[in-house]
Length: 277
Image 1 (cartoon, one colour):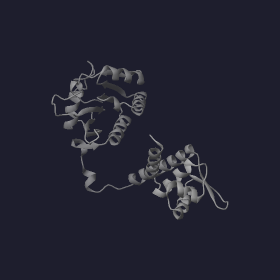
Image 2: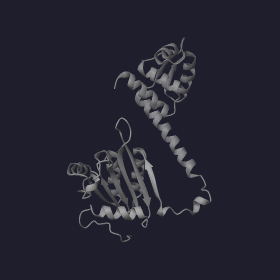
Image 3: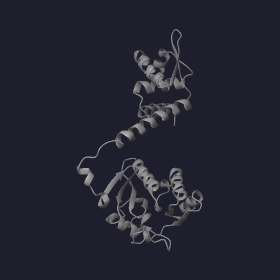
Image 4: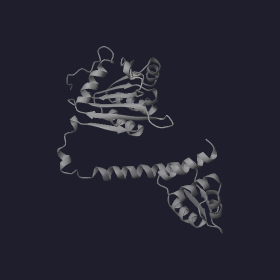
């Protein structure tokens, strides 16, 4: 990645973290220099000089810029680590405030009577599916069965979540699409039962026109299921992950996938159809 690409990416990420365009451009300009006046910042960032002062005031209030009250004034950005820590703290604080605000909302009358145990919901995008996977693993109280159909799904974060589940007494069983992935998972999850799945349809479809690749099958406490797949959906050939989620022992999707997964489990680990404690 060249300098221009790094600069553009930094500006975009800063905007995603809450800075306005001129604020982000001014900070990046200062980050590239040891220090600078408003004129210097304007020349480096292409932010109008009259708008630099407004941007600097905001950055200073956020603890991202320091000011030397000389004539003319000189500004400098805090260190990269300090800037990242400051933005991260603000982001966490905002998300926690959001959690409290959303959690305090009263449900509408019709929502109080909805029975979601027979519903199936679609999810799209790797962030949403990763988040739902984390939630299911962290909420599991007795058992997590995860079959991984693509190596990109098994991340350090997922490994940590599975280890934490096992440490709190949850029975964790992980299936892999092939031996190479199985060995990788075993190295990361010592003591966890890991096996090569017998689900042959995970690795490909018998239909030539079907380029869908199953990425994960997750069964939590035998009553919540998440199934996702990769498809190539854009002109660049990039893969897009999408999935479905269902909850409830009697949910049709859960029952079907529970039986399908049983065919790929090692002998003796069949989830079966009987209810459990």
